[in-house]
Length: 214
Ligand SMILES: Nc1ncnc2c1ncn2[C@@H]1O[C@H](COP(=O)(O)OP(=O)(O)OP(=O)(O)O)[C@@H](O)[C@H]1O
Ligand SMILES: [Mg+2]
Image (tube, rainbow, N blue to C red):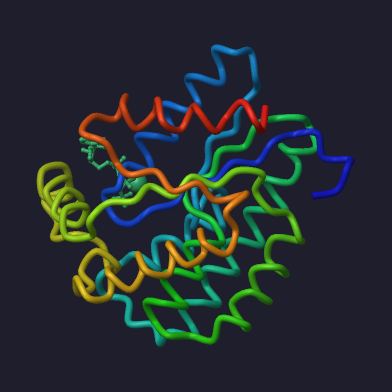
């Protein structure tokens, strides 16, 4: 990232039900208590336009072909970056983003078998070259995570899960492989953290990596 950006960009990644949203919030509270200004956001989404794309992407009645799905994620990303994330970083905020470019590698690359070179190129374009200083990958057994996510959906929305959650366990196992291979490729940026028995235990592990980026 260019020197003019004083903020810190942190992304939280992981499969369905791995605890991304829970950990993003805990991280926000922790950093706010340290006196930092935080922007907590998510992908796809964060802006009105990109939340619209999110709805299309997650709707169980949507039937995008893989390439179309990839382009929509990247379209949402470009909007979110230019309108929201980059200005916040320039203002010196800590931006915490629930999912980002590694999710595209994992889901569209390893899940849908799209060309990784194309994905990396689009990721670079859509992010304007801005990359996270720290990425936390929350690792959970996909079967376990999926069942957690689905139980929540039933309880709160009476639904059978979004379009991605309805994919097979095989798909989600491939997604996990994608995340782990990304982590191997970028060990300095991506920290693999196993989801612990409680959110606070997981949070404690994440905090160990924070000092280095603050
Ligand atoms: N370490 C943990 N131990 C036990 N339960 C947890 C843990 N972390 C999160 N949970 C619970 O698991 C569920 C899923 O967590 P959360 O919504 O944060 O995951 P997510 O990765 O954001 O899921 P999604 O992919 O659906 O957005 C929630 O009910 C949450 O309270
Ligand atoms: Mg979530």
